[in-house]
Length: 145
Image 1 (cartoon, one colour):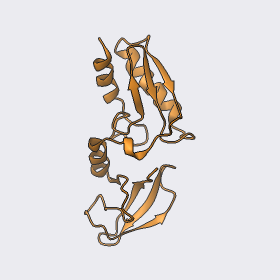
Image 2 (cartoon, one colour):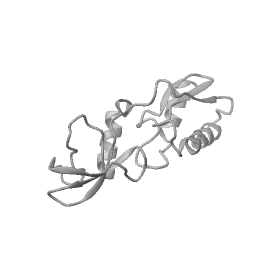
Image 3 (cartoon, helix red, strand yellow):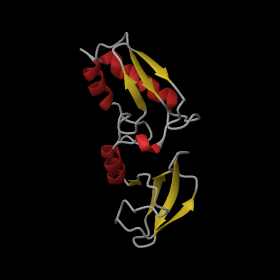
């Protein structure tokens, strides 16, 4: 039982707000050592931070890692650059446009880039509400930061 096994355990811990992706997919887990897991929330005021810590703790405990500590660090702040490519694909499949530097979002429903931001505030503070002009479906888009 080592660091590689801990990574495997953490890959099974879903994000509480977007269960289609794991805490690894989102880049919340910064590092893993034999005695410590370091995490950074998607933003410092994320209301899910405590739940994420509890979910990680439960997964570690259930797999025999009761002595592994969980440390939350805020510096450097989380960035959407930490979302894995697999995580971006899972977000898209779930109906959320992953962050892109392009001004227009790509609709996760039909793939169109004829989209517009409806509100800077989406279903969670880290997402904005967008709408596709082609299929007219609304969708969340991760804010780039």
